[in-house]
Every structure is written in C-alpha cells, then in structure tokens.
Amino acid sequence: MFIVDVIPLTYLPLSEPQILSYFFNSSLERGSIVEVPLARKKVIAVVWRSENISQRKAILKKADFALKPIGKVITKKPLSKKISFFLADFISHYYFSPLSLSLKQVLPKKLKSLARDLEKSDYSEPRGNTFLNLNKKDSRKIETLEKNFEEIFKKINQSLKKKKQVLFLVPTVFHLSFYSKKLSAHNFNSNKFIIFQSNLKTKEFISLWKGIDNGKILFVIGTRSSLFLPWKNLGLIVVVEPNDSAYKSWDQKPYYQSLAIAKKLSFFYNAEAAYYQNY
Image 1 (cartoon, one colour):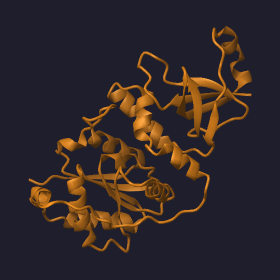
Image 2 (cartoon, rainbow, N blue to C red):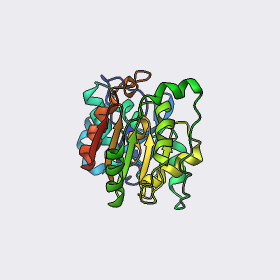
Image 3 (cartoon, one colour):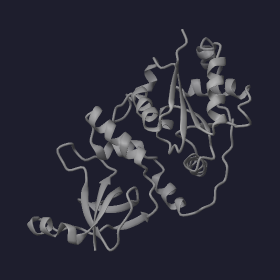
Image 4 (cartoon, rainbow, N blue to C red):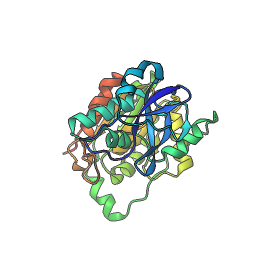
C-alpha cells in the first residue's frame, strides 16, 4: 500500500493545505492524473509523490483523521511535467495565489481528454498556417505595427536550424492574425509554424500538444496561454509588443504577467528571449 500526495486542481484557500494525501495499492509517478474525493465532490488532481505506507507509519498513528483512497487513475503516464510544477510554484509565490489554482492555470483546460488520449501512441500532425479573419476596423488598428522584422526572422531561422523550438508570443488575437500572415511570407527552413488558440477543438489541441511534447512541432505563434504548452527543447521566445496590457491576465485568477512567465520559461530552458516593441 502507498501514500500518494496530490495537488487538487480546484480552488483551495491559501490558509488550507495545498497538497493532500490519499492511499492507493501501487506507486504513481509524479505528474500522473487522478480523481480524488474532496469534501462531497470528486476533483481532478495531479500526483506530487508516492511513498510506501511503511515510511509514514509514525505520522499516521498520530493523525486524527483517516486517509481516503484515490477514486480513479485517469492516466499513469506523467502529463504534468517538471516545468509545470516550476511555473505553478512561481505563480503561487510571486502572485500570492494558491498552488492548487496556479497549477490548474498552467495545465491545459482539456486535461481529461488529453489524459485519456495520452495512452495512445499515434500522432497526427496538425494543420499549419491557418489564418484568422479580421474585419476592416481590426486590420486598420494593427497595420501601424508593421516594421522591419529581418532581425526577428534571422533569430528564428538560427534557432530552427539547431532544431530548437520557437515561441512567437503576441498579446491579442488581432496580433495573432496579423503576424501569422507576415510570418507566412518567409521561408523558415521548411518548418511551418502552428497557430495556437485556446479555443482549438479538442482533437486539434491534443494533436498540437503531442507534437510539441515530442519535439515534432518546432514553431508556434500564440497568445499568453501558449506559454504553458509542454515545450521539449525551447530555444527562442520572441515577445512582440511587450508593453501591451493584454499580456496581463486581468480576467481570471490567478493574475499573472506573461512577461514574467516568459522570463522564467527562458531561464528554465536556457532559451533566448527577444523583445520587440513598435512605436
């Protein structure tokens, strides 16, 4: 029998423990996804560690509560990576946010579907260079952002030649469409870029997630949620319009600044971070 410590992906007040313990009949790897009972409901949780029950006998004898069993194992394959815990811990401490909520922010919203699909080994390459449509008013709004990006293209090509992944980070969906079209006009050593949007269909999202996780997708352009993709070998983060207020998550907790996350991401992967502001 094993004691399994998990981080529930639900709101737990800062005053409450963020890592809870359950028991299970076998050891589970860190990053595995499980379902656990919490109060009167069942919630998704990420495994932090597993220990043989014999290692905690003394603590359990003094405990004034009984451990509950894990309800269900969704996937034994680690879905949450070291980088996920690293970023969640940073958000939690820096922005004074519960670890449970911070980890939920870092992990994909389609977690259950992704976890079920993770057991399969097949991979279908997602479509690349699919553009969003802007109306005339939106187009006029961002046409003023055009400038000479030869330096950006050079950095991107250098990174792709080394088989390093590139994240081209933009603040809004309007910028996403504008720069996607701009990037499509350039040849990046036969590497097509993939547009990441939070509203992708489940099948497309899973395909993209797997492609980044196994290193087959090298070049992604996206808004702030793309920072939390499962990067394998990130070599360059290009941040366009870093002064744009859209990089701050005003709309939902935990609140965070995308530039701070990009900085931590570049530190973790020893990747270059390039910032370009148009005036």
